[in-house]
Length: 164
Ligand code: DLZ
Image (cartoon, rainbow, N blue to C red; front, side):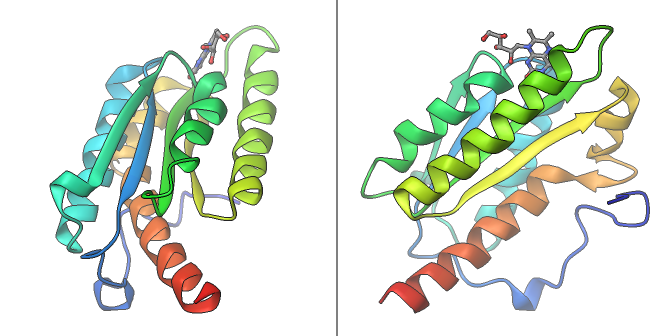
């Protein structure tokens, strides 16, 4: 599971499908916004690099990662949106809040994806420290927003191919 050996922004550009005809929803948690807004910038830049038109990127904000599930659901319910990217950052604190939020959001996002039969991408950093989160939101380990965007495009292409 270690991401230490993997740079989250490294991928094979040629293997990513064009996003020219895709419409992507992004839901961003405002908690730890220094991190999550950097994830969002990484995701948007990557989508645009792969042909997604700016007008086809819909960004919505929720207060914290716990609300990412329902925020994703509202976007996934829209027929015009092909995939949703959920971006958040949960940092381990002194209480068990961390575990509850991580469990809820990972399960919640999976449920939304299965309910709406469309990709909902888990772009949530779950780290022990703020520095680990910085390292993964445009720092030395890349940007999880980039990884999430690439995953969304690949899954959209697969969904279209298989469902058509
Ligand atoms: C309350 C809380 C705490 C302690 N930590 C985080 C965090 O590290 N990352 C995050 O995205 N949100 C956190 N929150 C807020 C919860 O996600 C949620 O917004 C509130 O509990 C209200 O439901």
